[in-house]
Length: 175
Image (cartoon, rainbow, N blue to C red; front, side):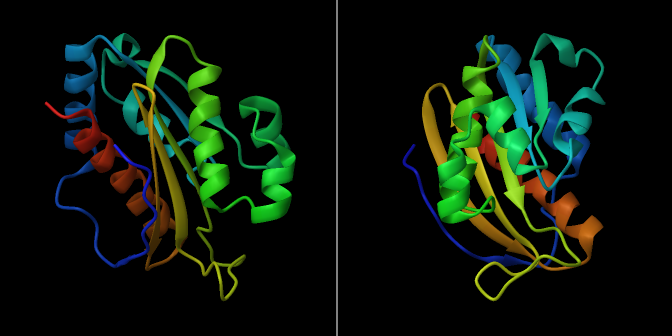
């Protein structure tokens, strides 16, 4: 899987609901015998919460890092502060470093989801408008990053981020 960076605007949520996506993630991870960790900023732990809502998730969910502040990203995940200074917290290098850090700090995880974004309603800029989210996935040592922009209020942006993170992980894990 190659690292990719794309921008698109999504105004509707994916077809599958969150519990179905979590079940699909769980099934694939259990089949492989792998564990998942999350590193979340703009979602504040919503991905981890969705995962642990499923009974038996301790068999495939290792841990979640909520790294809302820049200091937390550095302290808990090892994100180099110079990356944040140079590119901002909502950037490809930071999302990538968050995914790498989640794996490095949560053995035996072989899969990780990282998200960093601007959920709004404030904080956006012309270069990084409200709804901008950078994703990072690490699956068995392979990294992928992607930029998305979601329309809607704070709750909608956060929910869409959870859905997209899980939906893409399902695809990356394969059958």
